[in-house]
Length: 361
Ligand SMILES: [Zn+2]
Image (cartoon, rainbow, N blue to C red; front, side):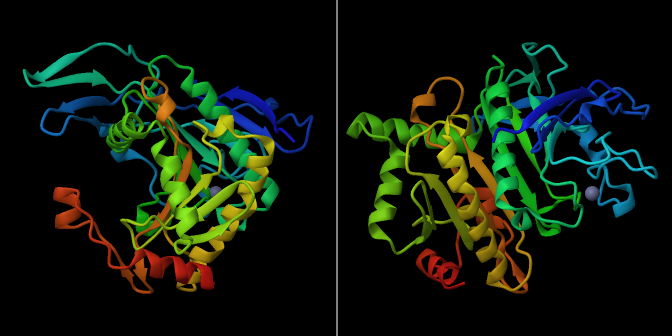
């Protein structure tokens, strides 16, 4: 069932949207009683001519909340003791604009200036949103019921559709960082959505490869990669009627899984009800296997790759990339010289062995 959607404004003008599983709830009647300062100034994007990439510079993010005590969690519902970011006393899934955004839509989007003659600067126009998966501070995505995962997917689809319609937005990226090892600054189970004004470097590289493949074969690159993995089977971890989860043959990370729909769709809004329903149990199963690898919560990054909104959209193929930096019970993989300076990954775990270990759990 489609969640009930209701929207309110926080005291500094930011938008907050409730996605409720029970119809007729009226969480939007709770006002934000805090006196918040106006949102911080926007970031800027500086062009790196050496790599043809845009770098966001957001100095104000240095002041953001860092691992607050649980009775002052900004993502818990508001209680008598603490007024949080969420004015209602409870919620199912809630999405709101980040108080410390890397990108903002409160600025004029097209004011180009220069740092030097070689380095143009543009405003960091876009939007950054926070997605709370549950009001339970001590829960985790992997502990959510199937019905809640479905609500989260519906919320992400709603946000993708709305943000993609903004003319300046080039790409919408929903993701979750989990674990202090990844750099998480709030323990409360949550994800984020970035609406970028430019195509990200990773997506730009995919689009170049996908265009080349299409010109040569007339086929979609990601669809061919998925079909090849399904045929090879050795790296497939699990699958159902609508989705396959596999370790990529050239995985970069010690434990990395792609979860892909069997049909080429550009983004989450394009998924059918049946596909959304089928995703939830399969993804929960993969998260359970991740946590089972070393018998403790696995730090991970879970990243939805969606089609760009402009040129090359037809080359997109929605998929989720889930990966961890943990390579052993007491060892993390850090991005050191080769990865950080050269972008050249060295993976210590053979992808076929990683798939076998995940299947065995
Ligand atoms: Zn909390």
